Image (cartoon, rainbow over all chains, first blue to last red):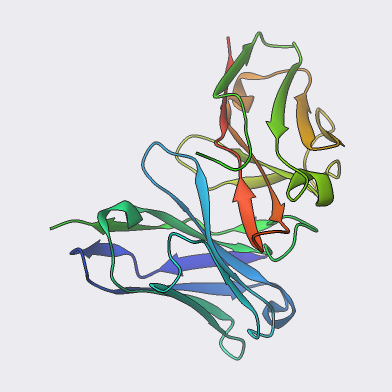
Length: 120
Length: 110
């Protein structure tokens, strides 16, 4: 069964850091691009970042550029999002998704999400 | 303000048909495939339509997608109460090298 399982969310103060992880199973992780998408309470989906299958290419939304870093460990089938200089507006449920570099195929598998709350 | 524009809400009676629009630009919908996502209350999004009009395995043919120019449309026929959800369109923005979503449309089955 194809599955994505996020972890690492929690409560953090403004200016703090968190690292999210997404464990993948059931597919050949290394050949697929992966993405992070977030959803603030009561709001729509907001794309955050994406990375190519090899990890050589990364992409970021303007709102997180310079603060967040996406990476992957293909030997561990795991995707990461390092979030620094957190702001209140980063409060959201963070989903990892399979796909998302280029539009072909869409994002065809989603995790259940992990909640990040930034508050003092 | 989302890059893709969707109506905030639509509604229809059980058994009826509804369409949800998604409007973009040349750099988004005009030059890229569109996908649609269904998000049932309290759950993660699920891919409903990809590459404008293709359905993943397990998605019933009551759901359809189309694209014309810089707009796309999701159609749902034979509405059921279980279709009540938020529907999001998405695509790649070739100018930004970024994925973009619409603001989402809440479907109510009256």
